[in-house]
Amino acid sequence: MPVDVPPPHRISVIIPVLNEEQRIGQRLEELGRMAGVAEVVVVDGGSGDRTSEITRGFSGVRLVSAARGRGSQMNAGARVASGNVFLFLHADVALPPDAATWVGRMLADPAVVAGAFRTWTVADAGRSWAAPLLHLADLRSRYTRLPYGDQALFVRRDAFDRVGGFPDQPLMEDFELSRRLRRVGRIATAPAAVRVSGRRFLSRPIRSAVLMRLFPLLYRLGVPPRVLGRLYGDPR
Image (tube, rainbow, N blue to C red; front, top):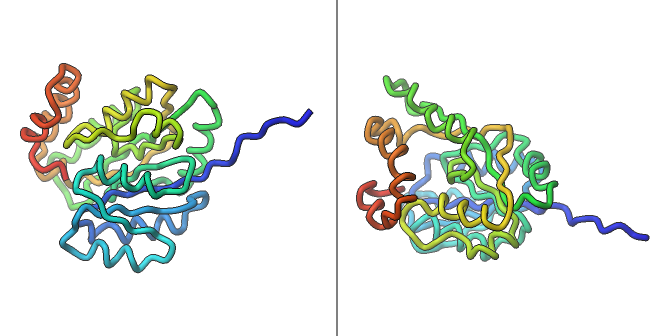
């Protein structure tokens, strides 16, 4: 009797960008050398710099436009992607070279609908007294059951469609997607780390440290995302 063999994972990497000319080229070069990545979709939210021009210089990378906002941009990328696994990557996050292997290992369990990586946050803009605080987020990435966007969330396409994709909200869209996914299956964390830029944290370290702890609690308590967005400022 023939045995059903699950189809191989075809990974589509989806990158939402807004004025990322300093970083997008490096990300695309890394992905171009990475085994196991089937396609890369860059979704521009209206950049005023050379982000789109740089992206067009990479053969095989698909560039699309969408309304500004990570959630709407990542949904737009998912609509045009051809993979059966979506990996959502921020422009200031670098994947480990064997990322696709880890995705395959995590999704080998049919009960796992999504996964993410641990983080290692670096002070890539120079020295700062606040650099030790960067690893507070790294600790969170090891133990949380609801991964954030900086953990390079990956998800089966059918599960992503089942929960309706990212919600249309200005903040916490990654956290909300994780909550929805956990209702339909397991979320696994790979024992490998992505390298995350600490640029935003170090620009306002005390405020960032407070908000990082406070916002998930406020969101769980029912504070609307639009209110959190006003408190946070420009989430980009």
